[in-house]
Length: 182
Image (tube, rainbow, N blue to C red):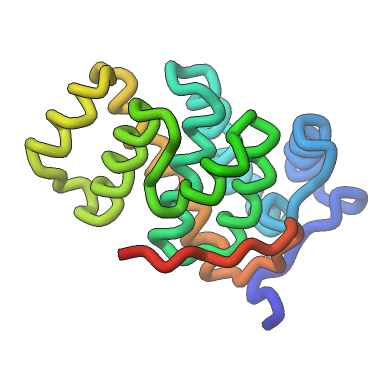
């Protein structure tokens, strides 16, 4: 199925988009189709990169942010994001076992697993989590700042999931079958 939104060629991009795409290329060694599609509006790409960059300076490690991305992609049936975050998760040190389990909100580390279950609850309840969900993530050792970042990671990934679902972005990462979530 062809993409429904156009993409920007970094070589011929307008100056604002060209600068942003150059940052992506430098950071990732490639310019994924999602970023090329976002670059049709430099404001969209800049917003995504700014939010992602801010979270990268936070309390949660990259590996956990990648696992949260897998949960979000699975819950929102985003094939593009699920494939992308398998690659990015491996780069961030997520084990093959945890990559495979991530879509089900499972992780080998109990603390990470609690964060993933909380992220899934945020997704499924649209933020109206039960007190028990909040109590469980706190009992696993997460403070309010970390909980805020889990919510931030969920929100960022909802944006990319929805963007790619609307765009039907051509998947330029190795395909990974989405898990069936329950």
